[in-house]
Length: 117
Image 1 (spheres, helix red, strand yellow):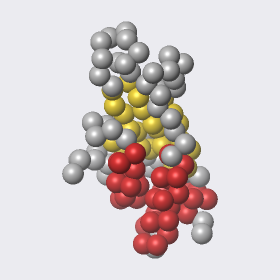
Image 2 (image 1 turned 60 degrees about the vertical axis):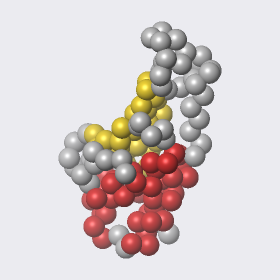
Image 3 (image 1 turned 120 degrees about the vertical axis):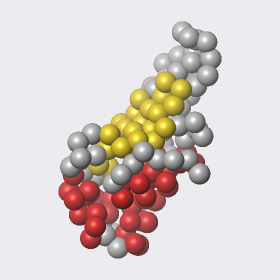
């Protein structure tokens, strides 16, 4: 199992639910201030420098600070549901290695509403 560089319990749980959406060499880290951490998933495709196949890719997940502060109050069911919603938000991301106009950094804003159910 891949080691995650994530301390916040809720973000750790969300990160585990996202792992299979990214390459096995992706690094998953918690970034940002302690009160409002984010998740950052990054990896590099192989290839020769300055070649379309050699690209650094990343996804920055930014979470509503209210959501992270309220995390200890969430039930197991609401946490699982939220993890599924964040996963669904991630499914639209397309990493087209062959497209020279490809976007290599995505930002996913996760509102507190993902926990409303």
